[in-house]
Length: 336
Ligand SMILES: C[S@@+](CC[C@H](N)C(=O)[O-])C[C@H]1O[C@@H](n2cnc3c(N)ncnc32)[C@H](O)[C@@H]1O
Image: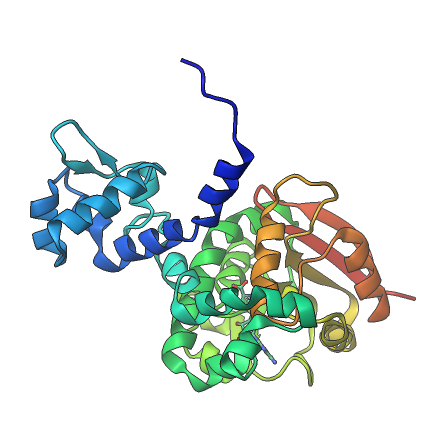
């Protein structure tokens, strides 16, 4: 049987209801449904008892998620784990549960209802909804900050291996992870290059959750708290992963200028970002850019935009290296 031709009206209408999918993912993640199916399929009544839910409502939730390949209902009405449901399990090797809970949390989601205001005025929707900028909000709300930082660390986990595989990190010297969050990428880089030392630079409250102790060699790293708009620690390679996209061009030029001043001779700056390609095809960077539009003053950039930005900070882009994922590495050196 062939599918009927697409009806644009029906398609757009269904897409306008698309928010119900992340809402359903969030509910399943909060209830811990995937964890309860790890040992085999269960029927809704049994499952509802295990997760503390209403059985008929839970069945409706899972029936909808099954249309996206998240859980599967069999002929006997039992629900099974699928690969797409398994990643909602907290202990799954490739879990995305912390990211799902952060991305769908109220403080990140609610400002999306103000996208039109952001577009009209060229200002983040977040500021309009909450009356202050995103990172100021996190500083004042530790529980939401923890949710965001854990989400970021989890979000990064899928990318970090691809980054260390794609770039020939130096074998010696000091790498500074500027705005490095909990330091998962830095940990991966230090593991891959035993002769390298690392500095994790971020805001004090964030550094409290760092993971560098897992390296097992405490003399190879240090954490430094500070404000990258003021200065950054000295080093041979300044890593900025998903940092520039948070900020306006003027703000980025300040951060990059501070990196340039802190670079040792022959050093490099390495920005890791979703470089947006030309054309209309879907690209993760275009999706992430909507998130920037809602939350922050920054935006995702094209390669020419990165070249211009680095140029304004006295840096010259030497190459753009793709990774196996959505992010690319924009490498730069001090311009003459
Ligand atoms: C989007 S997160 C990226 C974290 C990490 N690089 C990653 O990819 O997982 C941006 C980071 O910048 C840090 N940050 C924001 N403003 C900062 C500032 N003024 N000085 C230093 N770090 C800052 C945040 O605390 C956060 O960890």
